[in-house]
Image 1: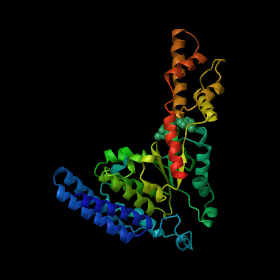
Image 2: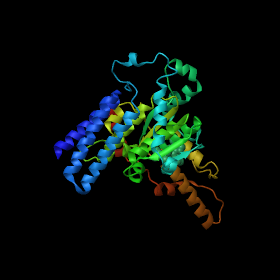
Image 3: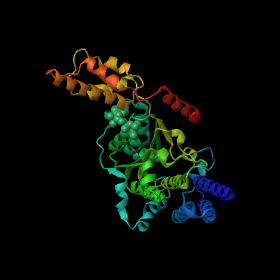
Image 4: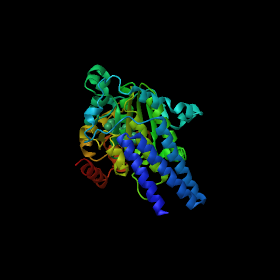
Length: 397
Ligand SMILES: Nc1ncnc2c1ncn2[C@@H]1O[C@H](COP(=O)(O)OP(=O)(O)O)[C@@H](O)[C@H]1O
Ligand SMILES: [Mg+2]
């Protein structure tokens, strides 16, 4: 059993490597081999397990079939390989356009149920969240300005220098610090629809059809002239492969690498944002293959950002003269953005109750904030912050 399993795994890896290298023939070969060993495993195991292996093998066949229909662009690696110069198209305005078109046109005949699935991910045409609504995160904002906003504002200059708007960005960091909010704000800033799906949802809700659905979601987003695709909990979608990782996981990773690689040459602008609280659980290949060129650590807000959030939260609330917001901003070190906002909300609730009980004016006092701080502690532990720092060090040196 383990021989078959090892063979299958090694073909899966080889398939993924071939996709990374842009070698369609090789990728098809290894996907077909993975299917073959998958069916062999199915026969050997029988029963429920066997059925699962068979289902997985079908998935690999499907990937092979897909690759046949949509060959990969020549090479997608921007790493140390020397093919860079040869790869650069002499006419930057028309880089392998037909590939992009093939990629967005291909799934239509295969999806008889049309957009019946779109209920399983959300599309918002205007999120209404702006960069100005987000306190702090200056580095992340300027990275996105450079990657997407400026190239869209000055397309001729960008094209002349071979710069294309969009791509993949991984947003990682402790929960509640504005990753989702940032994604929405980016979509608003570039007037793009916001596609949202969560990794956990894709795996559970789309059980058995996860790769096809993921593929369709990617194509749907990519068929728009400009779009932001937010893949929340992307660790659940592209988990690190282990001996215990499920077949579905492995197929999802491969499918994702293949689909995203195929979009590189599309004339449309797609920004894929992957968000995760657990970047260390993401498959290595996702980093190696440059699917997320940019990685942005979205950490806890600093004192200035916390002050911004407090001011925003109390914008319409009357504050007693004894409330010193800058001092509170200093005090709430290691509070996440949502902790800060939650504490302010709690203080308002406490002030409200007190104003009812005392029949006094609705005013937030210093001791309302004190009571709120006792009720809403920071959700971020030093151990958790250390984990992100260790990840940064290990991953980016
Ligand atoms: N930098 C920030 N500026 C303003 N509000 C923030 C910020 N970070 C977090 N918040 C508040 O916390 C809430 C949760 O943030 P969210 O984007 O869902 O975090 P994440 O996706 O990182 O878990 C937001 O809706 C917002 O109210
Ligand atoms: Mg979020």
